[in-house]
Length: 435
Image 1 (tube, rainbow, N blue to C red):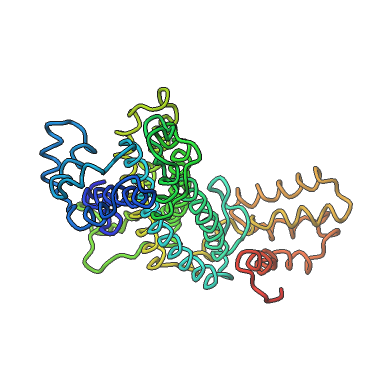
Image 2: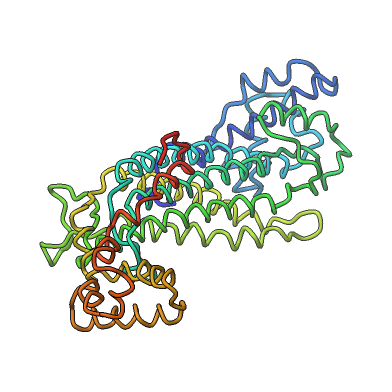
């Protein structure tokens, strides 16, 4: 991912220096296990650890001749270590190092992503509680439906990101495996105890069966989860973009004093950050298809997955980290306008209470179909003549014989729609407060 959309901490995980250091750690762990099993002389691992320094330029130079990155790496290390270098990589294959390293890097990256989600959850919880009783209109199909609260919007996002946290934890478990099984995964030239030792050393689990490569259904699952998290980010971003529209203006991204919204129109304040992360989430989702296609490799292995993962491993995790961090900042600094929410509630002049009237009529013996026709007729009259729904209903003598004027007025109370907010909040935040 380009620097514009990368944060240093997670980008470092995918730098060559970190990758080669992990490769070296794997090789040292294999040597340590072999020493314990008396397969190679004692002291090899300690000497490799002491003298086996990473020289990226040298690795590149060797690779330009041998056209094999792991061989180039091993040759460069052996040059530094000396004769003990011959004991490195015994009985294992390149995929053992590459796959175990790739999974380890995904685990490293996921720790940062998990922290990002924790930070978003904290912001969402604070906003949920702050705007718990801030009434706004709920919309379905983009049209005014019934009243809700702005806190419920945030609570919905909070619960979704709680699920995302759990999904990510499960996805990390899925890819936290280590394979040190040798050519075609049969352990013909390597003791399975060595694999178990390396796995424990790296904090990974033993891959139950690897066909020389770790099965790629694990990675397809992982990248699919990243895509779901991206979908949740976009859900929030699109809501902000919609609510910042001039004709709605219920929220607004923070706008710095020296910030410019448009090169041509000085009045513009655009939701550029939300638009930006909407675009980034499209990228993250696009990585799912190739990760699914990586599942089917030829026979025990091929490397058609390799070029894909060299791209999507860094790009998906780095981009998601950036998007999550940006979303946290957007939510932290967002400007919210409760007065405009109330003003928008009044646009349809009481039409948002239509269902309550419908239900009340059915309680008085009207069939649902007849009650619906009566309320719909008045709703259309209210819309057409630009008058309050209450005024239209109050003039209907047949209706007021059934529902008194006094009761009719009470049915246009916004609090009716917020009476169960505490119930929902207790479900989400485990509050002990009573309704």
